[in-house]
Image (cartoon, rainbow, N blue to C red; front, side, top):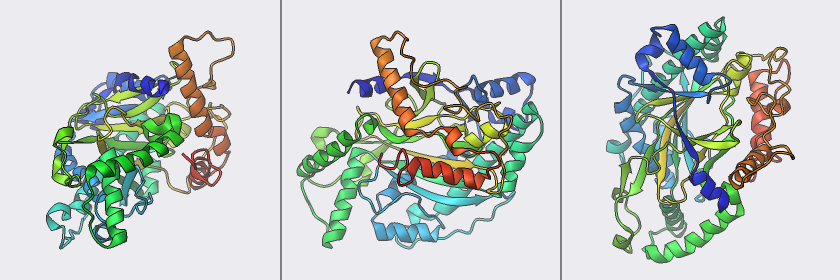
Length: 427
């Protein structure tokens, strides 16, 4: 409980902002310096791109569909995803899941042709799903290419941008982070499917039984119950993501009926916490920092491959997604594009300063405070978080070896995080 309160009261930081026009063509060396300052060893490893043309329109059409897809009945969702060439990388059959993700490979192309397909049952809602997914995805890929070009010029060479082109494709994910009420709806859908008919259980009795189940699940993971997504590094070059869309019920607690939550009772809202719920770890302060970014901007994070390719001149971002305990019916949607090198890209770490560090990006610092360090109560909580992160994030030195290809590095990273004996396999 103390740790959860600490997370609720975490420090907030504003991301360094960069106008789209300056990303496309930096007007001064000062702008380049600010970019490298934000993404370099002493910065947070991320920045926000603002005023991207047509992005607001694409975002407003695509993000609300994340929740709608997540809460569709299984068979209908399968048809919709197939029609729009989308897949998933999470177990959508699991009604206890806290996240739903819908993915597509996005190939680099100057003028992508998107074939429009229409679902007969959900034509009005999903008819432009695939088109909007790809259009927003290509827009975000272009942001990553522009940033790679700037970083290459500052570092010397063109390895970052060329690595992106050599990969030929990026991966887009439309993600919905579930609320407590979403969990109830999914359980209802599963029960209706199992019995072959819709049940009209009282929402109050359903809440009692399901809340007990959810509480047991939350208690079983302790400190991590206030996370939608665990602490981790992205292992690509850049991760480009939209600022999130938040959804809350539009009714009060006293207005609930015996019917289940209808979709029309949920509305988009500004972040009730005042931040994005994305949080990064500050190794100097040994605490989580909540990220605040301009509405409708794009956040770009540095991945481990960029850290390695740049020889430490760019800093990969240790991050997670915070789940506010004070807003249990809050859900969160976002769209993410992962930019990575070609699978055959070979890494050389002979002159990489973090190759033998205990923890990448920390310049060899140990996350756990030394025995002789004097601590206040709040510092104890921060160090508890540091120790927890140490337990669940595998050191880069254990995953990266000289001459590894990106394919080998990604496989080893995935194995150590999520494999049968991975540090987060049971989280």
